[in-house]
Amino acid sequence: MLRNYLTETDLQGYAVKLSGLQWTDETDYTKQKIVSTEKVFNHFSRDGFDLRQLMPHLTLRSSGTVLVADETTDSVEDTINRRRIYITDITFTGQDKTITLEGSEDEVTWYTAKTITLSVSDTSYSGTFTDTYQYYRLTSTVDTGSLDYKAVLVETVFDELFAFKWLWWIYYDMRKAEGDQFDIKMKELEAMYDNAFNNTKFYLDTDEDEIPDESSRKSSIKMLK
Image (cartoon, rainbow, N blue to C red; front, side, top):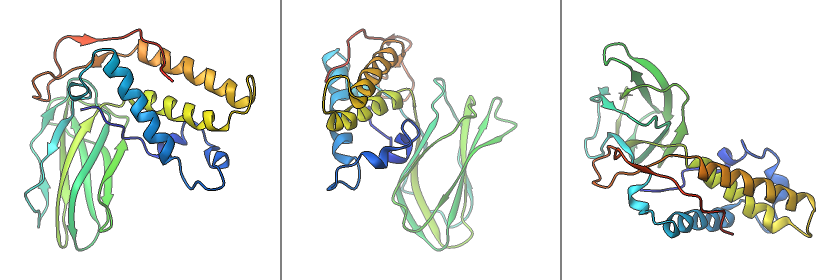
């Protein structure tokens, strides 16, 4: 199911001076994120996509089994290079817990793709990684207390669409006249959004088995404001 996993910290990677663009009564860009996410969703819907079939996630661990000792999950195969891990449904007691995402090409030799530390205040976690593998598994280290959580892998190809649209709406709020610095930034983002949308292979999962269909779809629809 299509979802915007980006945070403002992620967005700062695209525009490092964002904090200087806030209105005096704003503390973050949540409002612009909500609008921009809706715009991206509407773009796909108008182009005939079923949002539920986009961004098929890959389940690494389901919640419901409380850990009081270390655990290594069964391995799962990733066929489309998902590069974001999302952890939710966290229940937690005791000290900080470590979750290690491990990757392998043969399910024999395993490498660390990402190490995550969860604290008692965490309700969810989202982060990307760069080393990609065919197979993944999770190792949870529980030295004290208990831990339960759900973890999935999701695609990052949608991140650029959400980021470009989010920034577009931030600059839209700041634009004063045609041709000013924010108007120029908006035009640049519009072109970047169009290029990303038109040149991205969107995988579908029509039967919800977490395995992308062999067919995929692309669109030439231009940016919708």
